[in-house]
Length: 347
Image (cartoon, rainbow, N blue to C red; front, top):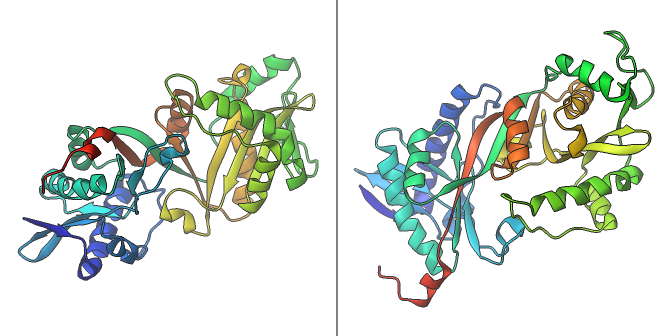
């Protein structure tokens, strides 16, 4: 096996190999959409950060990354690289050994370019690839998950919600009132917010940022002002749903037509980009019912798939999303000792 730079002539075989690996994961996760082509890999040949594995002139694997960038995870001062979904792939035979050789070659480029945080997006059911990167010191950090646009099984939660405020739930078939843009259930009001109402959920967004900083998460993102938060939601064309009790927000859900992986480009897909529920309402069915409220609306609009990405180091998110969604990628990360840049790295 020969390991060399990823070049333009490797692109046709690399795209076919990437598509084959995607189909392999799709057999494990049927909710994934069927695709017939992958995004162009030209940019990865342009930046000279990739590696290709060849056997008898045939491409058997490749590992590319975006160009090194600052402020990795928006919460560190380190420079890093990221190999996104479809920017790496390997044939099934000897897959672990192929990835091992590819990373050894590519990692030298990355470190020489000053990138000390290495992140690679792998398929969640690819045990060979995941096992090899684990052996090289990587750990799980990010998860992309998906489900079909169907209501969650929350009926068993409704009695709990009723006990929370002592109100009688409406009988099945009329639990959601027919008010324009709103539904009520167990003393809670669910609604999709208008852009001028986004400021109502900013207090929850602030609590989410505080949650990021807690153990074992330790993610120190800058807290946006209310004005910045609202402007970003409008700029990204986000949609915000919220649950209120007595006029106060208890939970919110933010969605966008764009997400972390290329499948978010599908017209029938929408992605969760923000979510938070007050601690006192967790585990009681409130958030599940907020999701159901959003699903009812989105399904009628023609959306068939709902996605989410989250950090596995966030135990609250990991428990909740893993219960209702199926993982299809796992982002693994390794942090290199920055002091290695002070010595000459042998070729």
